[in-house]
Image (cartoon, rainbow, N blue to C red):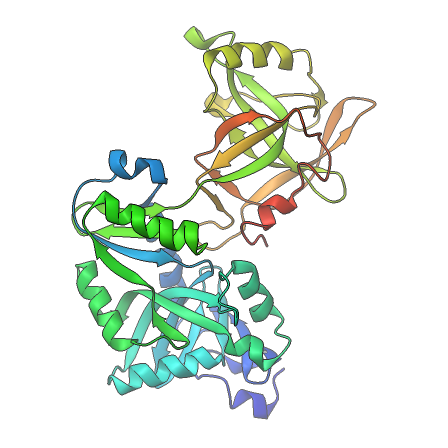
Length: 398
């Protein structure tokens, strides 16, 4: 229960008695305790719609998959998607998972800017991120650390909010054209303080997009670029990530692909030695590789008390964990569109009996557009070479 002095620092937009106070006026609550719970629902819906509208592509696809035209290009910040709710002179943040943050210095800044513009109420989408004093690339891990368990007021002062969209202003929907929306964002949140517009520009050619990708992503280490066009739609341009994973199962092709590998079931190893399924990969193989791999895998079969179902409702044939492969992917997604965890099964493996057994499901990720790169004969299936920490180094997992 909050003390009366702490309650004074809480906005009237949430049940103050339900706030868990972290440091000074900064506290964390839940979406269900908002005075207007529909704000949380709208945050979830915004995440779902945006995820469906932004098509992931990689650098080599800029010319082949990106329709010609003018695009609003913005820097993709590595942080936590959130919606800022402003009403009655007060502000808070809510993310799709239902975490509500109150009392952050950035919220005071946002309320001042909106109030100065005579805005009465607003729902503003952006990325909560941690601004390093060294200028180093912000990482979502830093947000999690500073926001969950701040060690000092300085941690809270370094949390910033990069605005990239508006849901509504004073109860009215924002302009249809994204360029008009961003013009209003720039007017409301100008400057480079704790609340500011995301870095953005307008581009018309593939060469310009290449230039910003080389500068912002490859040069400065930003997470990626977001491209929006009122006529061509939206795209998410990111560098590919690579992971070393263990092969624990396979399925065989059918019909004219009989006798060839269809796909592989892959896992990473947790610190306790258990295997956590990370996903499947079915592209990137040559036909010769599919034939040779299938032949070898059939000699590696293992028993299992757990069945993972693949395409066509066919169960994977489990194999002894002997292969390490390198897989690339466009993105790793750690949450559903509603902010829930993506849970993957954890298996134990009994080497003497060559048998897998299910343990439980825990959060991990979904791989977006996974592609087989190569066998890693220089690596072994152990908690170092195929460690689960590879995933946590790229994206925050609950």
